[in-house]
Length: 118
Image 1 (cartoon, rainbow, N blue to C red):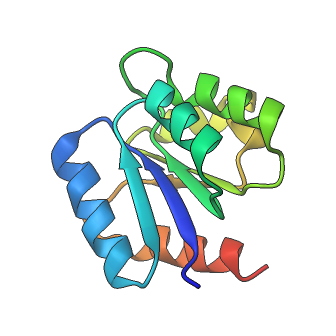
Image 2: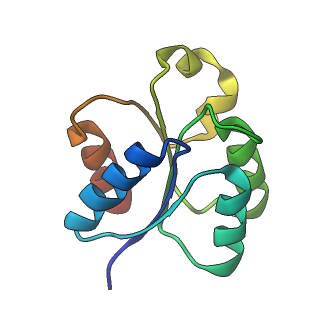
C-alpha cells in the first residue's frame, strides 16, 4: 500500500506541483491549502507523513504543528518553507525536518524517503 502524505500549502500552483511530483514518486497525496482543512483531513484519514508550509492565512504552520502534536505525536512532520529564518524559532523544532523551498524538490523528496523509511 502506498504511503499517505498530507500536504499543506496555501499557494495553489505550488500545491499542485508538489501533489503531482509526490504522486509520481508513488505516494498517495492529500493536498489542502490551510491548517483548518489539514486538521479536518487528519480527523478523517490516517497519514504516514505531513508536509506543511509555515506562512499561511489563518492558522500558520507552527500553530498547525502544535495542534497535530496534541493529537498525533507519531506522524513525522516536515516543514517546507521559503523562509530560512524560522529554523531558529524553537517552535519549529517539534518538526522532524526543515526544508527550505527551492526550484528542485530533490531535498524534500529525500527527506520524505528518509522519514518514511525509519
